[in-house]
Length: 210
Image (cartoon, rainbow, N blue to C red; front, side, top):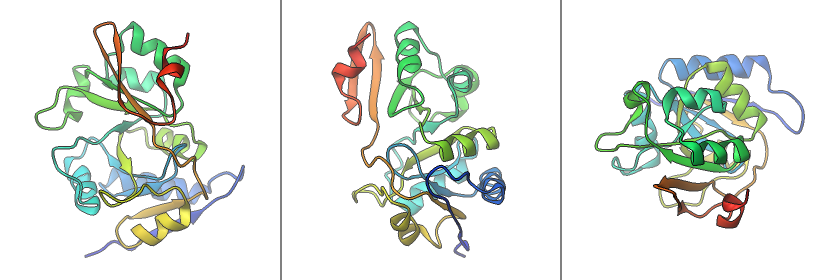
């Protein structure tokens, strides 16, 4: 049975209604799926601690099960609970979080429960969008999140498009208008070397600058 999607809308500096925050948090804690804005593109997310919730994201997107889902958290402090940040990664996080940088890092002992089968690292990010940050902080949970689009289709960068594509598939959709439109840069630290795994908003030069 398809979920009946609740749609909430907000624009500009207007704060997200408390009812929307409560609805999102309730859905995520119960294993539901939420579509929401980030600083890059719209994301489709669920509680990363519930495998059945992540499985729904794979099914909705048609995403290959061997492609791990990135993790979104609300702060650098929260990230330390789940991933190990060496000196280089910590410096990058301090410069670019919140922001469009996804770091691929080894998990802490507590973070191992978030690993996808056959993987040894987690891709984590703190988004620079007030709606996303408020929802993440209010839930108190790490979210498994990927771009809100069917696999192979362009990422959705406007709320109306998110509603059209995911009404009846996600429990809650938050429409906050347009987002930045460019996906995050994905980077890993290998030894002393910075490796850009996916080009995005931040350039290699911006990542390398001190």
